[in-house]
Length: 232
Image 1 (cartoon, rainbow, N blue to C red):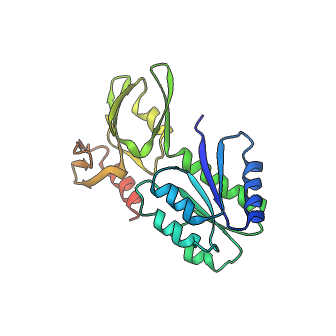
Image 2: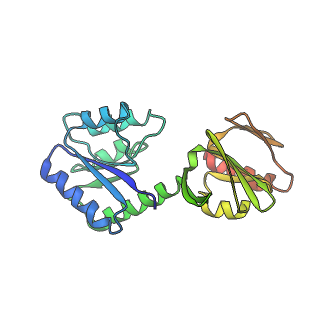
Image 3: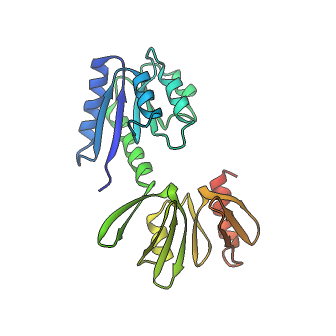
């Protein structure tokens, strides 16, 4: 079971506690570790100095340290948490587009909060590929996977820093991976489009330096997936 770390940041202690209690009511399976902050600068310092890591920030905008500016700074980090803005003012919603994953207005509406958290969990789950490896359960970050390569009834996963061989097929792997990020240019390969530097009509070149073929049979389907990923 993958556990997720959540930071709740609000300079008003009573409102911070309201948000924390909403998280606890949602977290019926105890999947979250929650940490509280009343100072956005302290939260930012912990993240920038890598003293702490969080998967999600529930962040008030109207603080002396300005939650919007804090979130904007975090987007420049290589791996930054999802952000849900929680504030009293509706006009901040437009300003938050492109930075916040979701935007919620105080006092929190429980149904809207649940919907936002459902979306967060779905997004976070898509960032992990959980597999059985050498008798243990291993959770890989999907962003660390370059591509998967078929070898009969086994798949070789090429990751940052290591390669893993698992007993599964490419179609079985694709069922567990986020389809918006992974596509098959060839029946023997599944590529993480996050790592594609460029693609021609016959091959893709990855940030790892690997070059993978695009088969004639897979070309149209792969190009559609890659264009969708690029937002074309």
